[in-house]
Length: 516
Image (cartoon, rainbow, N blue to C red):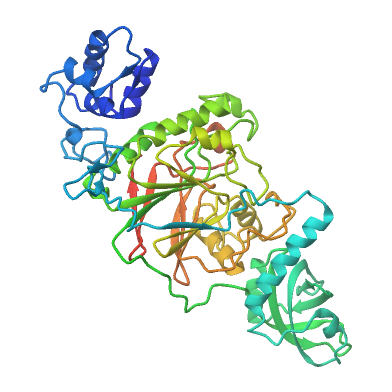
C-alpha cells in the first residue's frame, strides 16, 4: 500500500466484504505497516462480523504496530510533496467529544458550541419553483429583474420611461434605465444600443471617440444599465454621454465575524470520475483534523459533488462509477472523512442530478438521504449563505462560460476566473445573458439577481483557481478535485486540482492550501 490514506484502507476492507468504524480505520492508518495490519485484523476478526470495530483492531495489532493517527503520513499541511512524514498531526475524529466543562469539542480543538455559530440561507429556490415554461413566466422573470436592478440605478440618474423620452423635444437632456435588447455597430464604427423598459424601447448611440467606448465590449444582452445623454434634433435617438452599471459601490465595506473562525470554500469534487483525485481529497480531509485547521469550522461546496452521467459526449468512457446513485453514495463516504464537528453546506452544479436550468433547486429527498452525513445542509444554486455575519454568495458558475466567450480576454478568461466574476458583480446578476448556453428557468422572481452586495462571491465550474477583490468583495473560484479528463484535454482545459481556499471570516484574509 504505497500511501496509507483512509480511502485506500476503506476500499481494501470493502473489497473483502467489511465495513469499518472510523476509529478502526484511523488505527490501521497509523500502523507502521498498514497493509500488514489489515491482514492481521481480517485474520483475527470473528466470522460473523461485518463491521470492523476499533476494538477488533486493538486486539489484532499491538502498540508497536499501531501508533495513533498523530503520526499518520497521509495528512498534508499544505503541499504534500514537501511535508515531512513525521510531522505530528491531531488524531482523526469525526464526532465531537465532551470536554471537562461539558462543551463538545473535536480532538483537533475545533469548537462546536452552537451558541458561537450561525449559518442562515437566503435566495434558495428549493421548494419554491412555480414556473411552467409558459411565455408569461418569462415575462414575470425579466420584469422582476428589471424592477429590482433599476432600483439600484434610479438614484444615480434623472430617469424617464422610454415612452416619455419619445415625447421629449429634440436636443433635450435625457436619461434612461433599461435592459439591453440589442447591441450593434454602425457603418461609421459607432455602437447602437437599444434599451427596453416596461413602456417600450429606445435607441442609444455610443460614439467611438468617447472615453465611454471602452466599456462597450463589456455589455451583454439582457443586462440592466442606465445611460445619460442628449437627444438628437429629431428626438429619435439618444447620444450617450455616460453609462452606469448597477455595480458594487466603491465605498462598500464588507462585514466580518466577531471571533476568529475560518471557512473552507471548495467545489467540483466529481466523485465517480476516473480522474477524481482521491488522495488529494483524503489529504485535505485529514488536514481538517489537525490543530492547524482547528479554526476551520465551516465547509462550503459550490456544486458538482459527482461526475454525473451523460453530461458530455462519451463521458461513460471516463466513469469509474456508472450509476448516479452509487456516485452519490461514494461521495457520502468521502464526506465522512471530514470532521463531524464542522458545519457543511452543499449546493448543486451542472454535473449533479438536478435540473440544469438555473436557479437550480437543492437535491431531491432520495439524494438528500444518501448525503445525510454530519447533518450537511443543502441549498439551491445560487444561494446566499450568511455565516456569523459574513454573507457568501454561492453560485456554481455555468454563466462564466458565457461571459468568457462574449468579453475580450483581458476582461474575462479561464486562466483568471475571478475577472469574469468581477463582471457579474458589476452587473449585479450571476447569469445576465439569456438565450445562450446558460439555461434559465422562468420564475415569478429572478433568483439570479444580486440585490444585496455579498461580502464573498464563491464560484466553481471552470476548474481553475482564481481570486481577487472587486470593490472590497472577495471573488473566489476554487478550482477542482478532478484531474484532466480526455474531454477537458480536447477543449484545452488544464484544471487546478486539489486546492482548498480557506477564508478567515474575522478579517476576510485568504489562504490557499494545496493537497495535490
